[in-house]
Amino acid sequence: MTRFQVRRKLRKACSKAKYIALETLSMGHESVSHTGSKLGFRASLKLVGMKPFIRALTFGSTTVLGLSVVAGSAHATSFTLTSPTSGGTLGNGFTPVGGIVLDLIGQNGVRVTTQLAANETFVGFFDSGTPVSSQGNPGTIGTQTGFNSSVISALGGGIKEVGVRFSLYDGDSASGDFDDSNDNTLLVNGLDFGDWSSVNAENTDNQGNTGSNGFSGGGFRNNTLDTGWFYSNDSTLLSSLYDSLVNTQQVVYQVQDVDPYDNYYDFTQGISSNLSNVGQGPSVQPSNPVPEPLTILGSLAAGSFGVALRRKYNKQQQKETAEV
Ligand SMILES: [Ca+2]
Ligand SMILES: [Ca+2]
Ligand SMILES: [Ca+2]
Ligand SMILES: [Ca+2]
Image 1: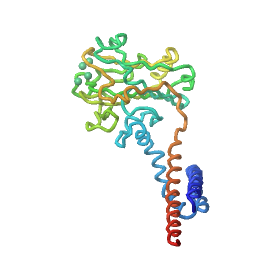
Image 2: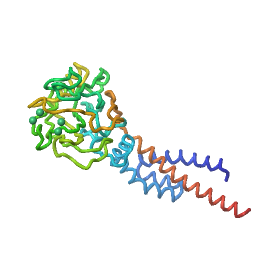
Image 3: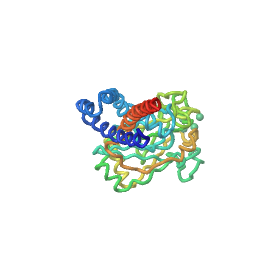
Image 4: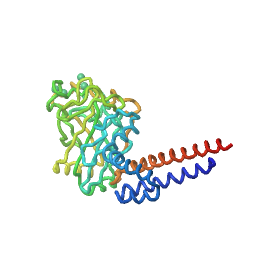
């Protein structure tokens, strides 16, 4: 067999494997025996063996896959990239740490997500930091713009669930810190989204990999980089939030402090500079965003065919050499 022929066979095997992968996933067991007749016993065994693995990829480890793309690391935590809303894992482009992530689930189940870059937020004490216009109590952490009428109308007339994630170094709101137990409250468009001390937060390194300090169990800790999710499905609160979106087309994140101006905030501190400038405007997410595992199955299947073909090619070569 010439190299050209091998390459052509490989290409054919690739497209076949991809097609079969799609079928196998959509049709279940019956298609395996069907593909078995087409591809031979060994190939069908491979696909059978792969099915549970692919399931795991689809439902269990999509987060890990997403993380390795974003953070470029195998140790990235799934906690920060998994929203507490029914939407679950964030789509591509979200950093595992840093910035303010907003995850909205509309009345119709449609998901809208956005991330305000960390370096677009307030820095300092709220009586002296910058930008000056954000000072005060409540103080403005940052503002997410871009909620135009098409994004808002995608939500189907209301909001069912909201998740808000931010990362903060030295938050001082965990148990025993000077701003613990109800001192700091998150306001979103002026609405109460909860006490910072009751939000579980996870320590990470500057790229979003699991940190040595684990979970706080509540609050953003002293001298620690912590990332936590706020969540609400309170229909009254979310109805007010929806109205505020319609009226202002933006989301203003603020902190209300019971004893203000004692806490220093820098939402870029401890976060790698390549992550602190990453943000994206509000966008409507596709309803069924799981194409990656299929592509992966295609590549895996194609890979194993490739190996088989290469073996065949090598054998042929050996035979030809022996014949010479
Ligand atoms: Ca305090
Ligand atoms: Ca501190
Ligand atoms: Ca305080
Ligand atoms: Ca602080």
